[in-house]
Image (cartoon, rainbow, N blue to C red; front, side):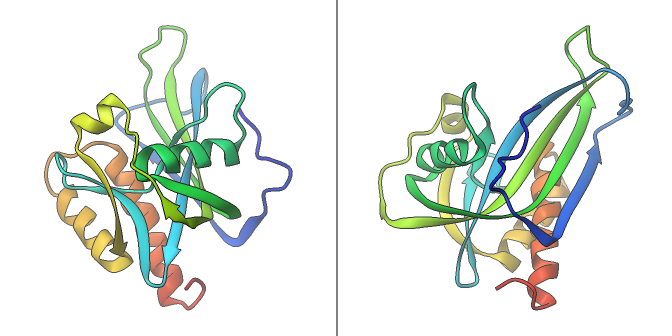
Length: 185
């Protein structure tokens, strides 16, 4: 497991969401993959990635590669998925842990642990450089109102959808709760 960077400051209201997909033992031999997600706000809008294939919205981010720290991975993912330049990494807003059946024989479960950071991007943008699977899913970055993004994902949850949509919808709902309570703007 990759530890949090020593400089990471956790928000006082940080969320810790645990999701279990199917009948999965969450204790025992768990293979964990660590990912980072950027929460970029511009007024009442969020920078999100829209899948034209699935119809869902997600936070820019992905897995930490060998030798990367959280901020380096955030910068790479923002460049690849959105063409955005990371200027600053702010508070750690929270984390999710998703458990599903492991494909590897040596493990009982597979866990994706995602850390969500408040991030600031620069004014200069370049062309996104998506991975092949992101091209297949029609990933397109854009600015979306939080309420609109939450409603879009809730509607998509009614039908067949990728497992990550449950995670992203829960995080969007948490952010909406904070905005409604005046804790985040």
